[in-house]
Image 1 (cartoon, rainbow, N blue to C red):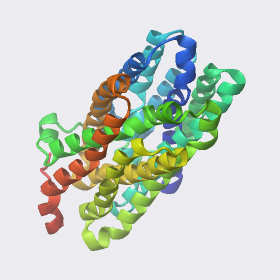
Image 2: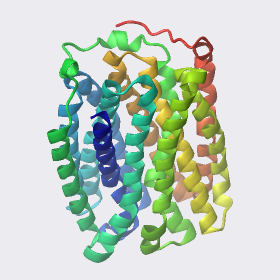
Image 3: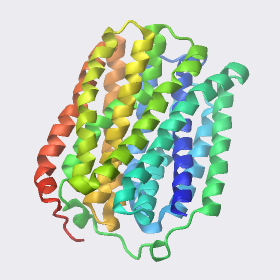
Image 4: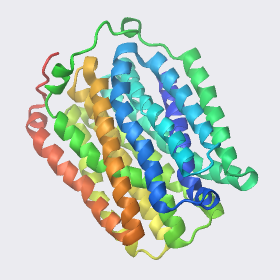
Amino acid sequence: MRWVYAALLLLASMMNYIDRQTLSVLIVTIQRDLHFNDVQYGYVVQAFLLAYMVMYVVSGRLVDRYGAKRTQAFFLLAWSVADALTGFATGFRSLALSRAALGAAEPGNYTASLRAAGDWFSQKQRSIAVGIYSMGGTLGAAIAVPVSAGLALRFGWRSAFFFTGACGIVIALLWILIYQDPEERRISPERVPWASVLRQPYILEMLFTRMMTDSVWYFFLFWSLKYMQESHGLKLKVVGETLWVLYVAADIGSLLGGFLSARAIGQFGAVGARFAVMLPAAACMLLLAVIPGLHSTTAAAGLLSFLALCHMAWMTNATTMTLDLYPRTMATTIQGMIGAASAAGGLLSAALISRSISTFGYTPIFYGMALMHPLAAILLYTRLRPAIVRRSLPVRKA
């Protein structure tokens, strides 16, 4: 049944990203209809990310207490309703409010999914399970492009949010009917104290490096399609027909990153295997600096797609590393903290990106993003290298 559960996690993550990405696909159309500018769009993104950041920590504690079944069902229903409400937006403020509600519910998917992976999969299989549900997210982003564009062109942009919200409710019902927590972990009898969580090694490094690298992924989610429309003159119909390939490449990166590190565990140990994938992926991200100079739409889309693959290979292994480094009794809480740091990076970058685009264009953004993964890789590897060499990690007991 564990692979059936992995399929359910994939579906939930797929819906999570469809609901999130629909706005990015349709933002140019929505801006024209509701009459707001790029700085205000930046505020909409920030509203989502602020709620996302706060609720990531809360969701981690809730999942540690109540298990994956109950919490995932609640979060799935909540974000599906919030997504549908986006279709009723009448202006910048109501749009920001509905996206903040979406941001409050969506992070629970990833803490619950990590809990399920830890509950049902061995150390060797965990990266594959994480890769599967991470692939679900990027698959959802890929599906959102043609589906949202097609619905908007035929029925108006509001229909896309109504349709995707309804689909999420159906998946929530499937989760409730099929998924079961392990018998011995249906409800944790008590929470690990925060003092014990905060004493764990490498937490600051994990938080800071994810803040750096995930700010790049938020650009892919919220700005890359807008960049291709504005810098390469693509119409919504063309975006719907072609740019889904960017997120399909990210799907491949999620699954490939998980399989490669699973195969390398015997040679390098768990954490060493994660770095065997993460380091080359980080080096490739330097190519982001090349994109503003590409005049070919095909070349720009192709390179963005390859770099989305590299980022997701990085992120799959960085996420799995949480299960490698920390006890199951606190891994979900720590992942909630890491997710909050990730959202904080997206929140800060959203403000910088919207203002930079208005003043200087996209070029400085690409130059800055090109450095994030290499610097994060150097920092994280330097701190964890002694433990990798020993193939053992100094985890402090709760």
